[in-house]
Every structure is written in structure tokens, then in C-alpha cells.
Image 1 (cartoon, helix red, strand yellow):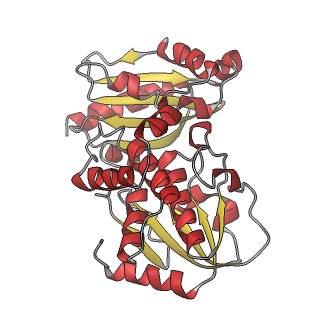
Image 2 (tube, rainbow, N blue to C red):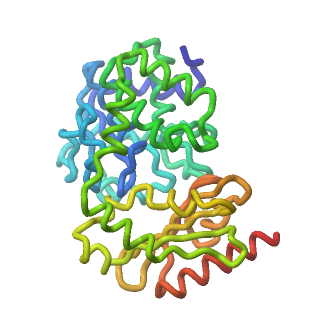
Image 3 (tube, rainbow, N blue to C red):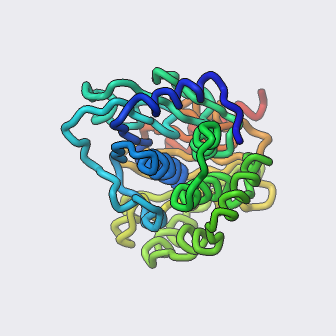
Length: 324
């Protein structure tokens, strides 16, 4: 059973005294955003609460097997909510304007594990050392003395498996393994989750990956490597941004590479840049220098310019920070 901290106690009090709950997360939701949101939704529903899950972007195909995934809304209902849980967001703006400008929400509760997360909630449960936001949902449930049921366990396990890179990343903490083991004990089938997340690739994703890898760029010192996806590549393959998940792992896997980069074109003259570090380089600091954010080993930002200009800026900044 998780210890009840003052912040968790305050959150549990809000759950006890309120009836209607809205749950949301960031745009382009990853499995932690989706899994933690659905874990909380399953838990609150089991407690007899009125629960609505809203995401501004669709649930990824790989996560549609999760309980309540088919009930996620992409248009915010015209109704009042006592509480809005905002999960895994980093910055409040990433929830989208429908949430940030809504006048029908009683209070916000912020659950996150990003470094430098904005404290926009009435209650902010933030732990950068947590393996995933789903781990914070787990802490809330167990601090209440409640049992994690199977649907909730499936969502929590999926989120943790993904956010730890299948327990490859440095956030694969003792807590991560302990929670995952407990979820397996609840009946979660590890192979089923793995199959849905990693063994059911659509053909267009593989075609897009081939094009992305054709643009593989490695710095002269061999410490930085990148792949790129452009709008033209989407058109050529019929793929979408959803199909680019985990592309950054390919340059990251190269021997000697300390930082992997993924340049994804959002529109003409605008790129989203993803960073992954093997530990020596704080990519959150690199990303922050471009107005982005994230964790020590995983971060992202948006930069305007041509692909050549954006690449040059990022590689130059990495060299500058390497010399610091």
C-alpha cells in the first residue's frame, strides 16, 4: 500500500466529495498518456463516479485494446465537470484550447512526471522520478486502500511497459518492476500487451520507416544521429504521424551514439524535434534552449525553418552544450 502524502490525501478528498470527472492528456497521446487516463477512468468508474475521457487527438491503434478506449471523446461535451484530471502534460497548453479555455470545470488536478512541469492545478502530484504517469495513478488507488482491478491493471501495465521502453530505459526503477509485477499478478498477459504495442505493425508504417531511415544522419564525432519524416513521405506511403512512434529508437541503437534525434515535419517550415539520450547528455536542457521541455533522457521541441536549417541548429546546439 502506498503511503498517503498530503497531496495524495487532498486528491482523494476531491474524489470522495465530487461526482463528475473529466480526464484528459496531451495532443498526439502516447501509451502512457492513454494508459494512465484510461486507468484512472476505469478506477473512478468502478467507484461509481461519472467519468468522461477527452483527448484532442485519436487513441492510437496500438492502444485501442485497452478497456474504455472506445469511449474516449474528441469533442468536449457541453456540460459542467466538478474535477478535471490532466495527466502527463508537462505544459497546460498541450491539453488543447478546449480544455485550457473551458469555463465549466470546477478545478484541475495535475498528475505528471515531467521535469519542470507547470503547476497549474489546484492539486499537483508531480514526481520526475516516477517511471510513468500511470505509476502516480497506481499510488492514488493504493493510498486509498483500494484494490487495482483487472481493467485498471491492464492500462497501468501498458503505460509503464511503453514509457520504460519495455524496461530498457533508465526510468526502469524498482517501483516500475514492482508495479508491473503486481499487474501481471492481477491477470495481465504480458504477451498480449506486447503484441498490441509492438507486433501489429501496419504496412504503411514499415514503408514510412524505410524512407525515414534513408535520411539517417550521423554527426562527424559519431555521438549524434537522426532520422527524418516529411510531409512528402506521408503522402508517398499513406502513413500518418501516429505511424512514427518509436522511429527515434533506430538512431539511438547505433553503437557510439549518445543522443538520437527525430525530425518530424508538421507543416511547411515547421518541425517537431524529438530527443533521446543514453544518459550522458541532458536533452531536456537542449530542448529547453529551443522553447521545449521533457526529461533528462527524453525531450522535444518545435523549431521553425527548413529541414537543413533546423538540423544545423540542433546539431550545433548539441556541440555547444557538449563543450559546457
